[in-house]
Length: 370
Image 1 (cartoon, rainbow, N blue to C red):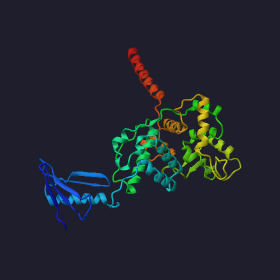
Image 2: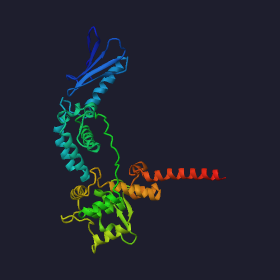
Image 3: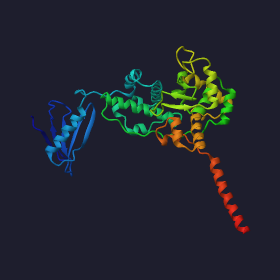
Image 4: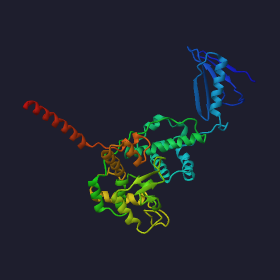
């Protein structure tokens, strides 16, 4: 084995370690800084510099650590120097992967929308291995926090795929924007205003979401007639985002009446069939009807169809006081998730406070009379 190379300078002493990679220009440089007892390593691979302390005072142990660090960097990569692609260049491969991967249709749309947002930022021209947490923290996106987090989650997924495909060594850690919970409920008043102006199938969907708490796109739009137990008045939901989401949902009287009319004499098939043969309705149709009906009803833009599910959870807990029943009905595994769907009932708090003061004054009056 070729021995180490030494070079003495007034500032520090350097040693070049071949590490079994003879003739490479990125061989490890081992040196000791002035006024320090530890040996440091310094090398570059594919244009990226790696320089740090070995935390060793012994030269032989330090040289082994330096060579191991170089081997870790080169593991599974081409021995020739090459630059990582820019985010735009990498997006072509990422989008092809989206088309071929076993992902839900909603997930594909989510990541494509996230890339659309990233394309409007300067980070699109950066090399994937040069994107830092500081670069990501400086990004700003139009719209709400969930919209911005769509872009950040897409970026995170892209960088992790780049690491999986051995294009980058590390993925920076970064935080998402804080998302505020939905403050609005699709209550009785909002329902009445919507039903006066809404078209079908939106009318039935509003009623079903408020009385079943089912997720609209993932569960309700794909409901099948053969999963309805008319005798026991139950709806079986076989497809959900969680294992707990596979559940039986009880039907209220108006849900039963609505489904009997909608299904009529049909025994099998989609409850909400599409115009395209063999398919069910999608979010595209319902969202257009929702936006139109909400505007005509004069309701705030912050009110979304999913608020009906929040109303279901809040009302159910208020009436039953049974968090377990709410979790089972909504398909939640974690009570923390279920509590996010609970909206404060200020009237309950107000009545409780008034009753306390009423009892207090009643007690004072009884004492005065005695």
